[in-house]
Image (cartoon, rainbow, N blue to C red):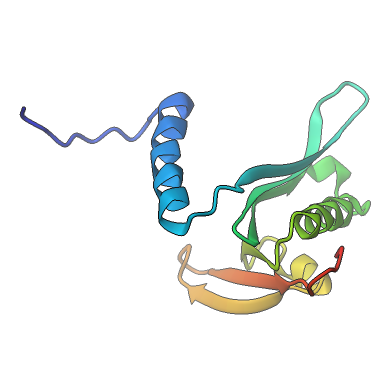
Length: 145
């Protein structure tokens, strides 16, 4: 059977999800840890429209916050802090000992640092003229936040 490689820069969300499942299945097999779960909190307005989200996952004693966003019209009202607190508490309740997040310098590294996250790495020039900052919060055993 012949195989070929092609550029497919716009994979559908369904196909991309199926491919990620292959990777996650291999990760579960190699680590003998199958406790991965999505972890998300959403704030909605009266019409049900999402105006804020903290989303990621937990797995193998860790958690990653992949998406943190609050609509510009609703910023400055404490929503980001509420979302982050809820995310951290849920990760801790699942046994996560560390929570990881990536934030560009023009986003919200200060929000995470205020919440007890520590800078672990900073990659200058990602994107050009800015930095990508990796932060981690270590949660004490038997702690809820």
